[in-house]
Length: 300
Image 1 (cartoon, rainbow, N blue to C red):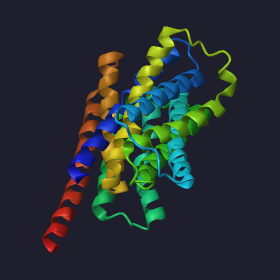
Image 2: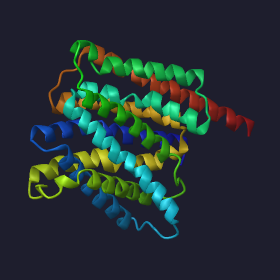
Image 3: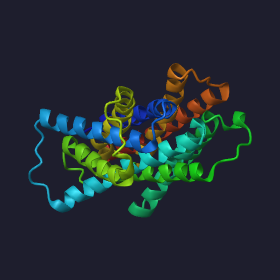
């Protein structure tokens, strides 16, 4: 896949994840628990992704057990991110949960440095700083004033940043030669197993006959557990991990706009300024990669 197509897939996957806070907040408002939302989400994602694999007749044969386990383990990062991120939304305001999640930007670059021994360039560091400045303004933390953060919500938020960065990093490293039509459902299978084990106590009382739960779970599944892993599986192998992380910052403006249109939450001038900073950072890092690609083509 070309680099441009990879960028589009990563952008669409990250943007879709920006809609999940809307459905999660609606779910909590209707009285559903963290476990109920996560279980229904992963069940729906499991059925949809394996159904898509059957429709396109993707072949599972020829995969080693070790490879399957690696893919499923990578998928657990999706489940962990859902648990921690939704848990942060449950204990904190949405804006604070988002700003904690978006620490994945610098964490992802740190992962690339530690695991791939790839030191960040000056441009990468600059784009990261611009992104974090944008996240700071877009999260509207200045207007919220001084807030006493619940320790559990703070912990969940930071953990979601680490697990989301881990998902982005490893989705571009593990079994990249396996078709995304198989990688994605295998990833969600790993997430489903993790979620079921984590929320085992919620299964007996799960209101499977509640249509509203399925609607909320369907929205969270589609935007949080179906599109992101599928599109990242298609797009991230062709991109550097640092670029994939910066591109994923598009999630924040999408989250703000969807909250404004669907939940009628106001967006301040500072928040729009933050969105502009993030977009500038995305183009800054993208131009860096495009320049490198052009130089390599000229040398060859």
